[in-house]
Length: 70
Image (tube, rainbow, N blue to C red):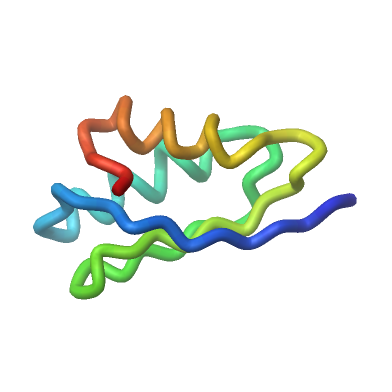
């Protein structure tokens, strides 16, 4: 297992609904082990298996949910 941890800056999150939306969409990706969202800092930290999923797929999923990865 190739465990990686990345923190992404995400714009557009403003409430707990946004937090849950990001957590649920990213958390449903195969290979993602953990998702933490810091609403105040506008950061999403993702722990994932780099063999099963890449960071671009995670970014695309966040953007598909309606938020901007900057």
